[in-house]
Length: 248
Ligand SMILES: Nc1ncnc2c1ncn2[C@@H]1O[C@H](COP(=O)(O)OP(=O)(O)OP(=O)(O)O)[C@@H](O)[C@H]1O
Image (cartoon, rainbow, N blue to C red; front, top):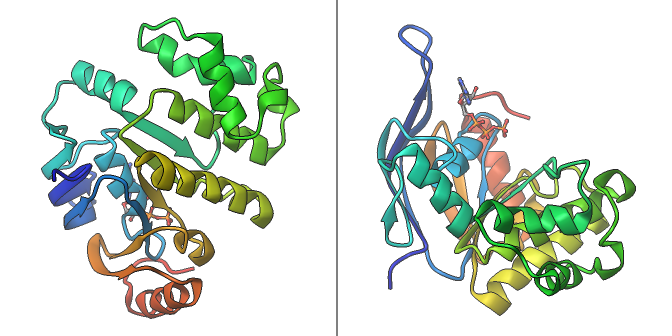
């Protein structure tokens, strides 16, 4: 079966002559449909760059990115924008909700941008699914951080994306709220066979995934299948000792 995401020999070099940074130095990996994968590694190891290239938010310098059967890295900007809207969902650390819009309208927005007039029942069902049926009319400033992240997840889910890309989705949340968000992501994979790729610094968060990919200096430096927080933390400690990047 075709993987949800296929990355082949991805390289990403930033900057020009003299001051170049090699953020990705040849990453190849497949994400099976209906899998939850976490990406970890020391600071500067290329995690966000990998996620952005895989999601079509950034273009690799060389290599191939496939989402479903579509090759992304050589699409025109217009077609890439359409594909992102229709087939990819995003959740970021800082929620990225529009402050002037209610929760309900924030959730409806991707469908509207896709040229559809969303049914009220649809957006309400998405908010109910993340436990926010009673917060439809609230604006982001009237919601807690965890509630805002749940709105962002509901928004990402309304288009039923093939792949959800999450960049530190629990980074701005306390641990209890973070666990709720991770349980929602886990449920998307288990109940709806969606595919999730999540960058995180937190071994507890990574342990919600089926598999953890470790990056070091822009390269894959191993993986853990069926990760436990302890095993992830141990592997991270070893990686940080050997990394040439800034460690934390
Ligand atoms: N737009 C850019 N221009 C120049 N260099 C960049 C750019 N984006 C990232 N880099 C560099 O590429 C490398 C990888 O960055 P990236 O953000 O992917 O790392 P990361 O593993 O996500 O780090 P962190 O855990 O600190 O968020 C770093 O050395 C970074 O400084």
